[in-house]
Image (cartoon, rainbow, N blue to C red; front, side):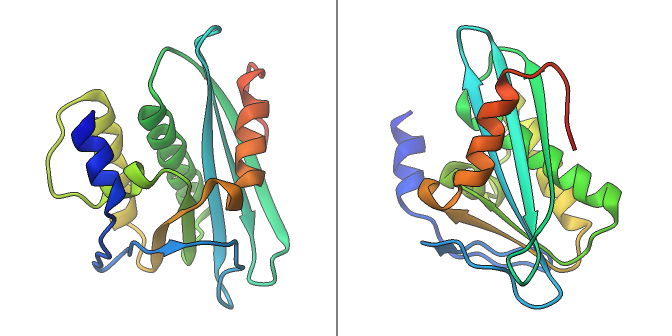
Length: 168
């Protein structure tokens, strides 16, 4: 646990053909002809439920779409954030959207996605799915943002915890 915390304190800027890591401090609309996807997850440990939510905006900051989903299960926060991110990637792929900037308030998730260390745990499997999905996008980015900047996605995820299905 200490090593995870220490890793999360330093987030290097890494680049490859399909994604980049950066840190931004306030929500900004994406560049022209791009879509921004903010993702988040929420947990209800007493009910053993997970809620995930994503919100999409265009380059003018105008709402494009949103989606929420709920899952049963006992998982930790990194697993929940990874699950939310993977589900958002899959949904974007199903829509055929290409120029997408993804943002999450989980610095550990972003670090894990771009880590070269192979993780054979359950969360490692979800993160590997994210890595494979990201490779299918020609022009996307994945960024860590502060929780205060991710309030809309956070509100959607919290609302999803009490749902029994998904809403688009």
